[in-house]
Amino acid sequence: MENGQGIEFRMRYSVRDSVRYSVQLAACLPTA
Image (cartoon, rainbow, N blue to C red; front, side):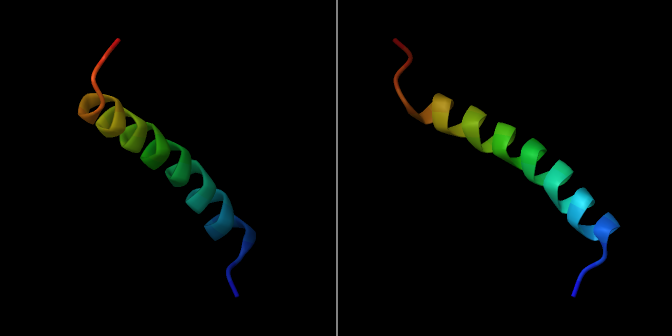
C-alpha cells in the first residue's frame, strides 16, 4: 500500500504526463 504522499505525487506527475501525451497526440494529428 502507498501512503498519501505517494498518491499525491503520482497524481501530480500524472497530470504533467497527461499534458505531454496530449502534446504528442496533437503533434501526430493534423492541425485544423
